[in-house]
Length: 344
Ligand SMILES: NC(=O)c1ccc[n+]([C@@H]2O[C@H](COP(=O)([O-])OP(=O)(O)OC[C@H]3O[C@@H](n4cnc5c(N)ncnc54)[C@H](OP(=O)(O)O)[C@@H]3O)[C@@H](O)[C@H]2O)c1
Image 1 (tube, rainbow, N blue to C red):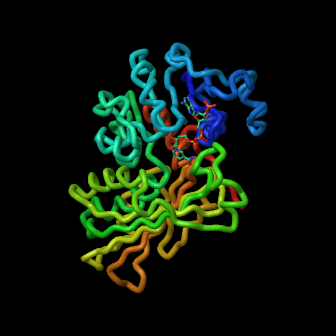
Image 2: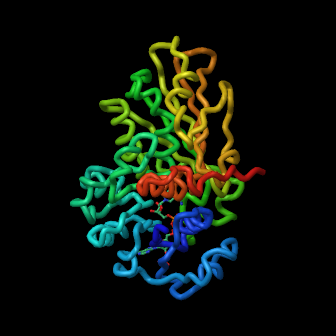
Image 3: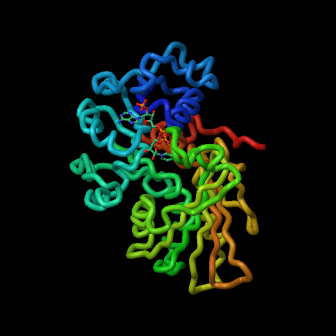
């Protein structure tokens, strides 16, 4: 059994990890932390988990207890993994971080976007960006994995096939993305109140969102050079889901894009290229570790429109984290992740 620790067990990605790990046959959650809920039983806080996890209770983060685990997931705000990851790696524990702490390779760029110095620049050289569809081989050998953000997962998976083949104009990419409210986490905030977010839709951070440098970093790699991306996130009144509508211009309109996308993701268990003409819905991936993609070229023009949907808490966070753990420990990548989406 793989002994698992979770730092940040009371947040939305933490409880989603617990839900997924409850169906994973090769893991046992040994430690789960919360500073505010110390001593509270996991199943008292989250009754959906009753019948799993016995008497497991939240405890304050303790490096010795976490260091006795085979793997520790960080489901915490940025900065927390910076402070603890090095010590855990020294214990021989693998670290899978769901926060942004190790996603950007450039510590100064991270500091600019997050408004504080990078807390562990010495670890950046070995951190692996945990997008299995790009980095599977590196993930197998990693000690420290940076799980991609939700918008970056939907956007990169949607644009990679075009950029890898040099088909799209890399200077004029647009990602128009919508997120459900759980993307903002479980902490109380005015903007996340039902009365504020319900029956409403708004763009935010148009000048620059923290996911922009992460998406750009991945797309630069795919394109093999500089890219220009306009990324506009929106908040929508759903609980889970990301819908990315992606725009790119192609010079050669004779390429069969449907065949290109199907070939690129043919052996990917968690990317579903839908039939030509489809419109993937966020509810078709709710609760499932899946990215569903459809590619369009309206009226046969040179503008390609890619539709890419994920559940922000699953393929956009905890499911992808578990997928990384499976790869890292040499397990079947699909273990514990085989459930179909919830519908309706
Ligand atoms: N929500 C999403 O859709 C999503 C998607 C992808 C990635 N992410 C990233 O995943 C991380 C967690 O997101 P979330 O939405 O689950 O957040 P959240 O709901 O706000 O939960 C945060 C968790 O971290 C713990 N925590 C906060 N400060 C801490 C500290 N200084 N030391 C130790 N534990 C601390 C909290 O428990 P206590 O305060 O009780 O200790 C809580 O359990 C974030 O970095 C987020 O950006 C989120």
